[in-house]
Image (cartoon, rainbow, N blue to C red; front, side, top):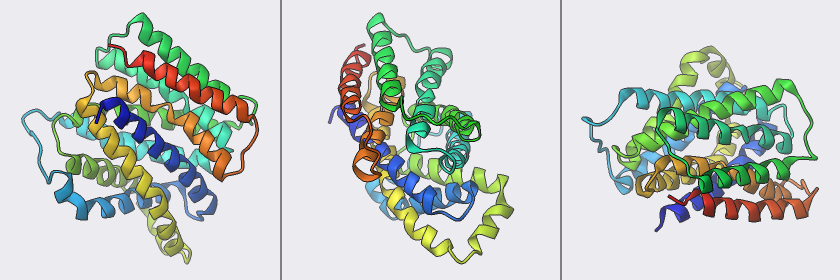
Length: 285
């Protein structure tokens, strides 16, 4: 399976996760910290029995940078905190336009730290992707600084997570990658707000929250797994991270179907076409 197809499947899984996490945030009576810990823990519980299917616990320790491991865990954990904080305050359209800043962060961090070299064609594709993301959400934006700022900060941490993942995936099995991302991310959040998480666990509605988390956990696992294999097979892993940002457009398309956000339908499908064109340009090496 080609790395571009793997990336596309990962994008679709992330878009489904985006819709499900919005539903989860609407129903949740717990804090953003507890949601972050709960979702990561549920994902880890699903992944553990499947470890033999995902290559077992194998890693090339001589090539692993422990700083990268910390960035994967920290980026996932902190990104989840800010993401769920924002989702409680924003409409889906506003949330996605704020989240689109991840494209800028991914590109800048790749240029600064991963020595990514972009051709004129690649840059044109990134600009086209940015146009698609902005156009699909414009007209629906309700600015709320209390929600937009956390989403932009969360986008930065998710960019750190994605780019660190592109490096870590080269030296560990899928199982190890999932465990670091999920257990590491949950541990970071728990260490920061253990008291809040414990209080939420004791609340009567916690069992319902656990049940709802399973619906968001499955697409999250799909997102991580297919992204892992895309990172492994792509000639330039950082390009995969940039293409993953196109999930914003597909999240809004799914919101049309499942969340009844049905404004500007023609613009949404036009943006989807632009994403396909942008991917064709960005993937050129």
